[in-house]
Length: 188
Image (cartoon, rainbow, N blue to C red; front, top):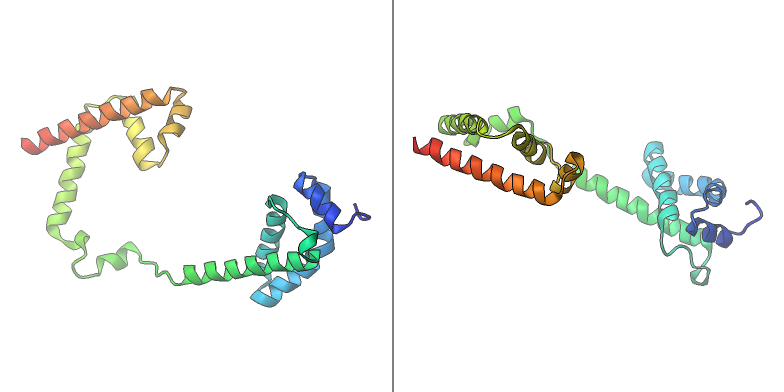
């Protein structure tokens, strides 16, 4: 691999030839690292950028075009772009203010502080628990996976080894039962 040109290595990388990527990495790791370290002034961030650069080289569809310039310039352009993306992401993340539940509860007028809201949520929770007694275990499991654990209908069908149509039908019936029981509970 050491006797191959950058263009030849990039062609092999497009064909997912791992030793070609390793050779390119060995050739340019110091350059990419020093460039990203100079930009970030943080060794850990520079390492993340280096990893992203070589991951991009490995996964890029277009690759390097020797007609558009030297390989080193193309590589540094990728490094520069990833560094900019990294800075933007950090800036965006640092602009968010995280509130804990205890901080939210101190806000005047926060719905969770309203006694009527607290009672309403408690009643709703009780009604749902009562309605659950009318569901089968598979229906309860479906609600749990879909709404509380975040699985998609397709993922649930795959886990249960059942057709997605069966899962959709079960969900429809489950929601119908819950809706009817909730209306009955509210009407009583």
